[in-house]
Image (cartoon, rainbow, N blue to C red):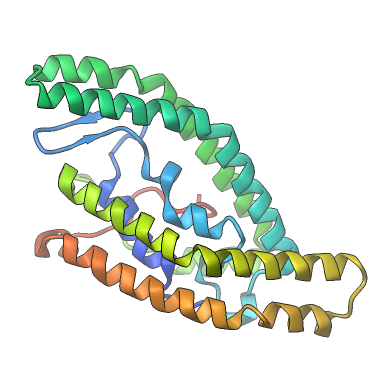
Length: 256
C-alpha cells in the first residue's frame, strides 16, 4: 500500500518545526511561551512510527520490509524507555515554571527554573541523534536517496514560526485526541506487522507474508483519513503568517 506524501509525517513536520527551539539543548522562555520538552521526545510521528507504520512516506517500490519495520519499532521502543525519566523531569520543570509565571515571578526567576533542564536537554539531544543515526542505517541506499530528495524546506536563520503557550496546548491536545481515537487502528497495524514478521521468521512464503500485511489495509486507510483531519485541525490553530512560513527544523526520526 502506498504511503502518500500527505501523511502523518507531513503534518507533524509542521508541528515539530513550529514548536522547535533553535538550540534544543537550551531552555526557552518568552512573554508568550514556556517550552522545555523537545517535540521529538513527544512527537506523534515517533509514537505512530514505533510500529514501523510511517516509513517516511516511501512509495510502493521502496516500501519498508517486515524486517525493517520490526527493527524501527525496536529502536523507537528503546528510545522511549531510555528517555522516559528525562522527559518526565522536563515536564515537571515546565509545570513549575508556568506556576511561577502565573504567580507573577520575575523573568529571571523563571529562567532559573528552566535552566535546570539544560543538562537534561543535552542528554535527550544525544539520545535523539543516536536514534536518528540508527534508523538511517535500517534504510537501504535507495530508500535514503528518496528521503533526501523529498526533504521539506529547511528553516532560515530566524528559525521556524514561534507558537504561543495556548497554541502549543491546543496542538498537543489535538495530537493526544488523535492518538486516543486511533489507538485501535495503530494497535491493529502493529499486531498485523508482528504476525507477518513471525510468519516470515517461521519460513512462510513471501506471498503469505504479503497477504497478512494486506490485512492492515483498511486500518491504514482509516488512519490516513484521520491524519488529514488532524493536519487540517492543526492548520486552523496557526495564524496565516505561521502557515506561510512553516519550515523544517530537526528532521523526524530516521532523517539525520
